[in-house]
Length: 632
Image (cartoon, rainbow, N blue to C red; front, side, top):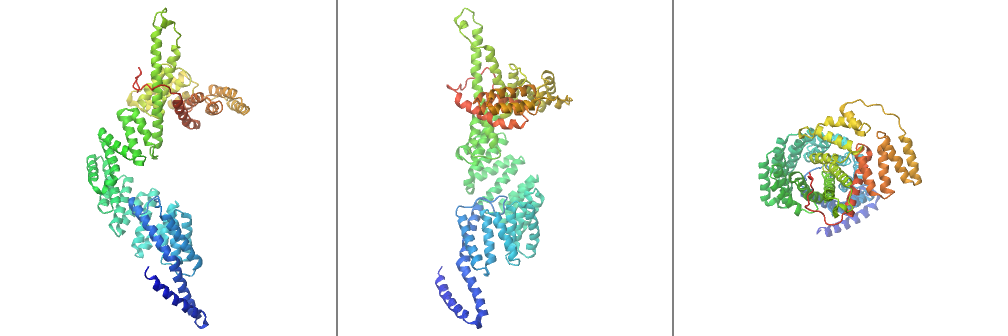
């Protein structure tokens, strides 16, 4: 900044000189040259200098943010910009646009175009960046910045998912940069091509690009990045031993704490995949003792918990996951720890209450790998405890009524009005059936599903649920032959014999290879149109009656599933009868589970169940009270 007063003095002399030359025709050509120099000078100090400084500051912030994330090169997805960077890039675009508009003959126009293109790229406006680089090539094909502009054009194409075009451009540019001794540009092109080939599943070519980057890299950090990325490709190519060596060498080649941390972590995970658990634990404990990785201690503890779990040291795993769960809050790592705890509680300890609570915490931060499963399991275990409480109460009432049934007729208890014992037992069987559905669909525990379905068959015998239960038991028996669930083929034959008109009879025939009889034409379409007209008239009860006739008389018709769905929809949205809607949706899910309507009703079933649990539960829950039936 101290040089500016001197510059202003010289700038004044330049203005006087230009005035003199512009007034003399003899010096007009000289004046034109000086005028161009004047434009270049003004353009530089008024616009380009400030734009260049703003861009350098922005790029330094981006590089620092990447370094904090353990990134040293091109990645498949861009990192978020630091908060102060976007305004700087906007300044660059404005200043450089002024150069293009007001100083079109300046020697800095190609530089300005380049800075605008780069700024649009960093801001994520890739279409504008693409246009600027294309403009650059058309106006300045021989610019000394051409190679660099083509590199940024390739990166822009990659961001626009134009992978084939980007690969073609990259493969064309790479030998040119190497021939021109542009080593840094050649390394950068190799880095981008590594990502592009990985994205199109050409991992061998991706690995070759990272090998080239390793050779071209001018410093240890670039070589460490190349080794790290090559290790990732080795994992995909199912070469874990080679991958482990790559990660180990990468960690040794870098002094960058965050990249070193990533390399160590991938090395440990690869050792774990190779079954070298003791070595993995030793490395993790070394990292925990290393002050350089203190800020990553929770993730290291999480990885140690995973290693303990794989080694069967469940209590130690629970301790580590609990530590991370309680200290990480609403974060991705905290959700992962909660999910691990939930699975241990469910599968290892059989503690469904703890599993439900842990699955609930794991949804605080949506992790794509398991968020859907976590929500389903949380809802399933919530429903489990609701059904469990209801069954315990039914069990108690049945016990009381059975006792009263055995008393002498002249006693007071025997003459007191009593509940219908058959109805109570039927309700108990339905509860067992719902438990079976819960374990089969939501919790996915085949042992418990088989137990509860068999319990349900002791009190249920109808043309809808019985063939469904039998069919599911047959499926479970055939797919789990070693668990002794029964003779699956015999169960399928029993459906064909006992419920020949059921949808499940048709499925059983297909599974057993029994020829299907040609179906007779039916009037289901005509009945459905009649029901639609009745709905339009507002006579919902009559419409429901017609729709139920379709499902009962024409169960194999393409309109059957649609009719069952419409009945449930009418109960829920027109008659405000959620319990009836729930029953109808459940029947649809049971009978037409492969129809598109089954996918529609699943979230509605869960929503109604949760709503019913929230609004109808009264009194203190029967915590700890055990049913006379087994829970699993």
